[in-house]
Length: 516
Image 1 (cartoon, rainbow, N blue to C red):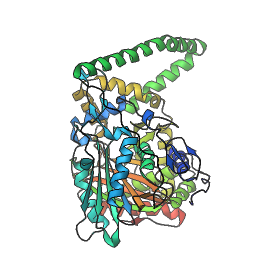
Image 2 (tube, one colour):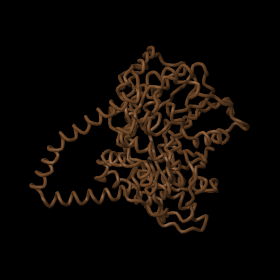
Image 3 (cartoon, rainbow, N blue to C red):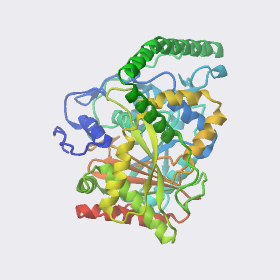
Image 4 (cartoon, rainbow, N blue to C red):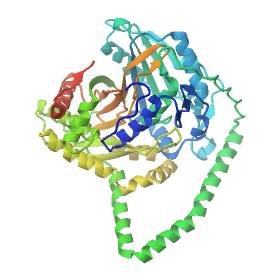
């Protein structure tokens, strides 16, 4: 899409397409962008009030369950550039962005006696050289060699005494290209929020965009244990007071509803209870009879398809891009099991459902991980898209999704070992995580280098593998993370995944391409 062009009409109605429409505002020329604070290419200081000073309950739960390393929620992304960025410009831009996005300079501190959720405090010893590094890729300098560098970086846990992000510039790729390995903890933000943050880091022009000076960071207030305890206790008291004040109105509304329609109220209450059961129920064993091992070892790989082709395939089944994406991934795993002469009747999937609304806080997470089973034996790709799509769409309307935050608050109040055990039972027998996120809608640059591709590698969080689609202009970039204990022959798996995408894309007359 050329700068200044209008956003195209989106036929799909999924959250992916709604988010694309939001992101496209970045590339529509002069005019105010409420999310990124850009006006005619200038960045305004509008991000500070879009971050909480404490973790939300869902973020705190993800922070806690990392007591089990298999459940780590590290997000890794890889951006490929057409040339090597200018190192001095890159350092200056990341420094500038870290002053605009205060969260990049904050670390996590847990209040004494765990009174209230973990808090974000300014790191007075912030060292940019720790968070931004540069290395050279070994021979032959291709994408595979670069991914081999990214894998161990993604497996290493964060230093919890520092801000929870690390960028590594990889120089020396073939044809003078370069890459950036971006690693962030999931408690910083989710996939959609991360793309909005990226828009503050990138330029719309190779020579760079004009920006006003970055704001000076205010001095960090004293953070003695006593002061932190008092602040956390006061905020907890205010939260509970607010809930208590709302309780009579909520109870009154519920009572009035029950009086007007007692049968309907009973039916809705029963459905909510069943929905909560579906949301929280443990999975006793994997659906796969062969992908059962779990470890901390990861293998990255990539493939890509034309975004328009994937949408066309979804529309052919009367569905969306997401339906085509899920059906392709499921079909690929079914083929993998047939290669091993293993019977596969159903797969257990985790699919994050985006709950982030317009103008919400950039930091933290606004999604809920829906876990559901899909049939794996449907060979016809059209029928598979319809079946898998119907299940995924039904989950978007589960009544329990409205209770994501209250459920997380309850879980966050439990002992960490209990919460970790509960999530282990919910996640470790999942076969595959599937997620798709709208990426950059138009050409973008960093320190003079154009971003030509961007891949996301979602954390499996206990699953055998994750498959993440991140759009880049007109390309669907697919990143695959494999737990090598579950899938020791990742090359066979990737061949099967490409075939799974090919049979879905055949409905649009095109095919997938292995990129690593």
